Picture 1: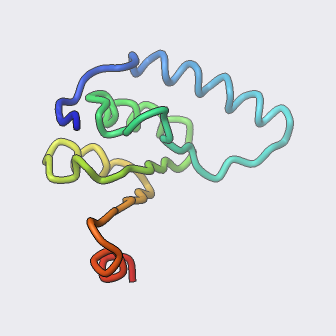
Picture 2 (picture 1 turned 45 degrees about the vertical axis):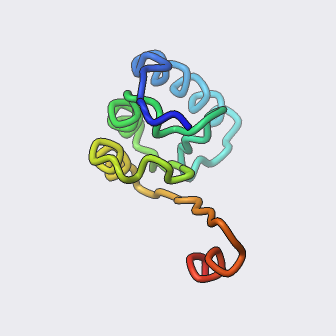
Amino acid sequence: MRVTREAFYKPEEVLQEVEKKVKEAKERREPIDYLTFVPDGEPTLDINLGKEIELLKSLGIKIAVITNASLIWKEDVRDDLSKADWVSLKIDALNNDLWRKINR
């Protein structure tokens, strides 16, 4: 499992691409409740996650992040996630009994 965060995209490029999609949605009169980080991998692996959230907040739309929580022990990850309006932590367990205790 990877625990080293790295840059995957330039935050400014993420903002530009999302701005285009938001504009297209508005032109179609489609409401947007959240901009959600659900990349091809784990979003907290991106060292630029916090900066991307900050930039996207300028669009006036709430930000959500869905994470497997594997890096939640890292302070910088928690700091980045605290910038989002909504965070979903997916937590797995080694066995069914433990999973039921965690996910009750």
